[in-house]
Image 1: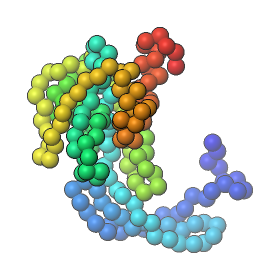
Image 2: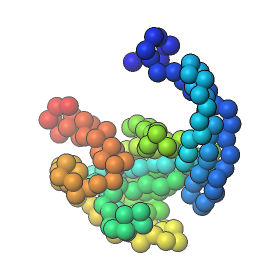
Image 3: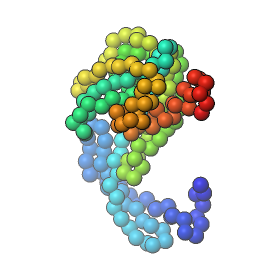
Image 4: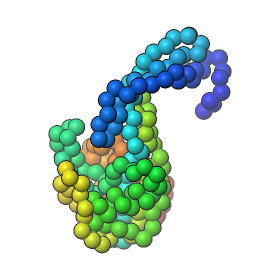
Length: 194
């Protein structure tokens, strides 16, 4: 994909300024003023400004994934997910993922690495979600939930979890994305190709 300015290609809008409309514990709502360089049109756009997030694919030595089931306020329903959370200012995404895994589930692993970084919704959000693989995950201590968290920790075989994602039992889009990035690794390890 070319990013050069060719005839017919979309133009990069010019940033003119921004103001904060609302500040909350987890995000800021901003009005961002942009100008289209060829059409000379200026518009205000609403952007959700948030810290980066991390999501953790935690693989146990016996080929299971560590999952969390919790009530989600946006959908007012329970959601089956991989562990994850907000990255603290200045914190490395892999370090944050290891911390979130331990805090939410009590699990820790012997190795951790970044699989991918994605934009959750670039139309209206400015942050990234970092997808981290932690291997040899074993229960190593007690969980340390945040104030409003109540989490059921579940482990299930990788193939079963991948099937749940394909069948719509797992509906959190960033979790499905994380599983998609992990699946080729799993297929290679189990000798089923990529």
